[in-house]
Length: 340
Image (cartoon, rainbow, N blue to C red; front, side, top):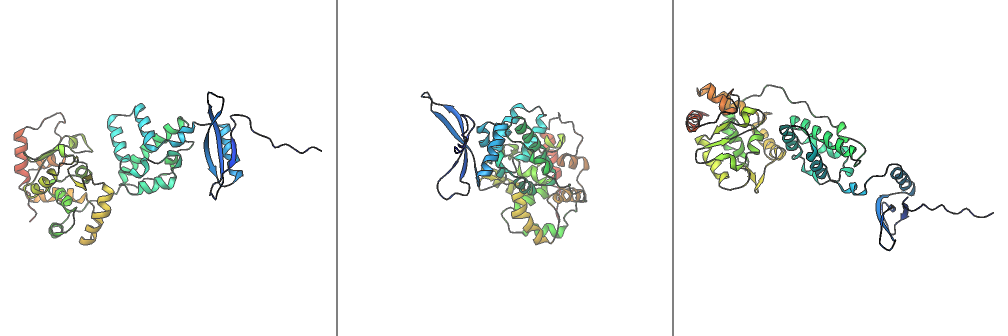
């Protein structure tokens, strides 16, 4: 009886070969991707596997549903770029989503096919709850685009569960704590002092660009979150002017930097705020500085309507323009603020 001949695959069906040497995944799938002018096959490796059985299974899946081999090398950044080019969401929503995406740089250069749920969860765990929600939203869009274009087969973002924002009342810092903060020795302590004297949100300050600071007339321009906040003027208190001037003169893109780079929120929390909380023996958050500013502004008898303008709670029409007299009035008012 004649021996059975081993079946060989036809051209274009791919092949499985065992690579030489001591490898963790020695079985490789090789696919024909074209031909030379002389009629010679041009091949490309599809994937590598521990066993021949795994390789055969992977090859069968590929033959049933072939995908563009180049998609294997597409990074999450590549998908973002392609998605933004076709995105129909409002510009404001796009900016909000991309801002959250920019806070997880560890994912940017990863090939999207290599990203695991654990990678996404670890990256998201370092963000504030509100930012976690924005990150999940943009990842849902990116995975949707990738699935539609046959780059990946599954939306991993569905497994992400953002934390619920903390709705507990924020407790202002008391005078004893403020005096301790002023004496706290840490390179980033200036940030907390600026927050206490401006009422700004932490991310507003960390994302404040140098171009949005008028050092001569002593004010910041712009913020975030609300339409009024994005157009507001924040006067620079005399007690922190020297701090702002120091950072301004460094001539970096962002006002507050470390080693000439913008300080990320998660870095600020991990390297500074944790140490400050231990020093003060408190669980207060950076947002408590905003409540502290409003509380002491009231104690210092600042005009309530002007305080609303400063912190971005005013009903001032966003199309209004602040003139010089407005700025002078805000400066005079904020310098009434005393932490004493």
